[in-house]
Image (cartoon, rainbow, N blue to C red):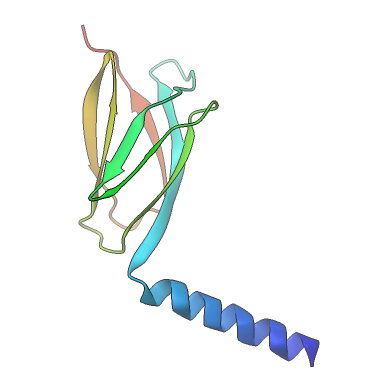
Length: 97
């Protein structure tokens, strides 16, 4: 019985998360030398977050391959990336001159 309940809850939670129209994108932001970048602003529509102490982030975005995420930080050029079918994104940032 416990096994059936577990699978039922798994199916319901998967169905519910797909129905809300959003997905979670996660990743890591580093500079061109591979050093983690802290405090990079990550935005998509009305959602936003910052990269944490090791450069990682999670953001909930609209479940649409044309959804774009913008990364911005002082001293670096802003970058906007279309998510496509990715659920994990690693960004290499280059410093502006």
